[in-house]
Every structure is written in structure tokens, then in C-alpha cells.
Amino acid sequence: MVRIQTAPRSRNSEDQADGREMLARTRALVAPALREAVAGLRPEMERVVGYHLGTHDRHGAPANGDGGKAFRPALALLACQAVHGDPSRALPAAVAVELAHNASLIHDDIIDGDRTRRGRPAVWSTFGIPTAILAGDALFFMAVQVLAESPSLAGQGVAILTTAVQRLIEGEHTDLLLESRTGAVLADAQETAAAKTAALIAASCALGAIAGGANADQVERLHGFGRHLGAAFQLMDDLQGIWGDPAVTGKPSSDLASGKKSLPVAFALAGDGRPSAELAALYESDRALCPDELARVADLVEAAGGRAWAAGEAERHIRQAQSLLENAACDPDAAAHLAALGSLITTMGRHN
Image 1 (cartoon, rainbow, N blue to C red):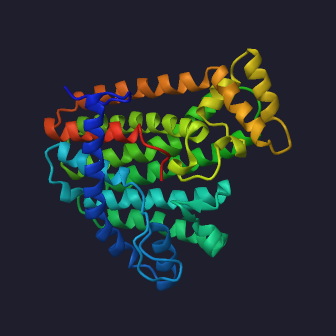
Image 2: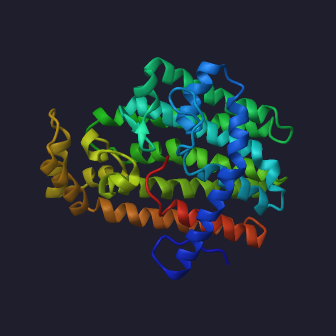
């Protein structure tokens, strides 16, 4: 029976080692295909996109920078293998989801005002906001083009990816609205997480399954596996955004400093006790909070149950993902690798 663990256990350490090995293999396989796709851009845009992907420095010279963890491409390749397909057939899916994900990161950094990404200046802070917007747009359309040129993914695959990207955009907009919204926001925060994070992870699994020749039931179950895995990932990411070490997350400051109503915060704000009331008062303040006040906010989120709730919800989504994977009639070995990668995704730091 396939198991995805989220608590420290001896088996979980083996799963994480397996997951890290798969990510390394995925990066080695996908990197040349990404370079080839990006090489189709005009030189100036190729330089900007290459800088974001870590393949070029800001001047266009070749570089070996951090190009991200490659979670989504790895899920696509493993989902293909899980339905007894040749993982090489899922390479266009792996490239497409990585392009779409990186497009969203470029735009996210502009919206959030984050000046760094993967330990170096973000695209917008290096090349300017207009150029960064266009670079993100170029990557979104390139992702669609990659699928459109793949015989097995040109129809249903394009529809799945474009639906996921539309969901991502809707989630980003809802996230913006949450910043100024008061009162109960938990339902909106959960919808935002499902749209911004889970939709593309679910699409990665579904696209890999389609490339592998899966039947409709398998595609649906692996899509659901990815959706629940993505929900757990976002919950863990939000926990890292409050209590994580910036040296590990790659972010210079806590989500709390920007007034972000992440899932633990949204749950805490929905409470009716003293911690929730004090937390709401701090969040409604028009001034920037000092470090001591931000520490107090984190304490209040925990006192109002936000931290424990988020961890429990992550576990619940993992169990649901596990159930769907176990009933997808997958190749046992490939399914075990997919579960191991899921274990790694839900225990690593912030997404990039």
C-alpha cells in the first residue's frame, strides 16, 4: 500500500531521499528542453527569461543559477510512468507546467513587491516592471505552445493547462482582495489556495497521465491526487511563511510583515476569543508593524489555533491524496515514487 508521510519517521526519511533523487533526475532531463523552448524567444526576452530560470546572468552570459525545485515537472513525469507510460512522452507536459509556474512567479513577485527570488534579485527589480510583465506573459503562452505541438496533449492537455492558469489568475485576484477585506475570510483564503497552488499541481499530474495513455478514471484520480497534494503543499508553505527560517525559505521576511491573510491567519481571524480579537486589531492597523509586534502576531495566530489547524488540514489532504492514488490502478513502483515525491513536497520549504 502506498503511503505519503508528513510526520518525521524513518520511512519518511527514505521517501524524502527518493524524492530528492527524482527531482535531481527531473531537473537534468527537463533543463535542456526548457533551454530549447526559451531559445525560441527573441534575444532580449530570452536574456530576461533565462535570468529568471538561472540559465543566464543579467547580462545574458551562461550561468548555473538556481532554477527551482522542479516539483511540477517531476509530478508530470511520474504520473505518466504510474499509468504504465514512457515518461519521455510526458516531457512536453513537464516543460509546459514548469513554464507556466515560472510565469506565475514572475508576476507574483511584482504583485507582492518581493525584490528577491531564489536568493537573487527578482526579474522586476532587475529589468523593470513592464519587462517582467511581458516575460511572464511570454512564458504563459510558450507553455500553451509546447502542449499544442505535442500530438498526445494538443487537445485535452491544452484545455487542462489553460483552465488551471485561469484558476491561478482568479486565485491571485482573490488574494489581492483579501488584503483589504475584514471579517470572515477563511473560505476565500481556502479558495485562493486551491486556485493559486493546487490547480497547477493537479494539472501537472493529469497532463502526465494523459501523455501516458491513461483512461478517464485514472486521469480524474491523478488530477484529484494532485489537487489534494497541492492543498497540503500550500498549507505547509503558509506555515513556513510565518514560522520558517528565511535562510531556508529564500524569502527575506515573513508573510505577516506584508499583512498577508494566509490560511493559518485566516483561521485565527475567524475565531471569537481574545487572541482572534487582538489579532484582528493588529491586522486592521494602517501602520507597519515593528518586529516585536510581528512576533506577537505569530503568537496570536498560534494561540487562536491557526498553526494546529493548518497542520491538521495538511494531514487530511494528504490522506485524501493517498486514497486517490491507491485507487488509480497505477504501477506499484511508480506510484510509490509518486507518493515519495508527495512526501517531500509537503515537508520542504517555500515553493519556488
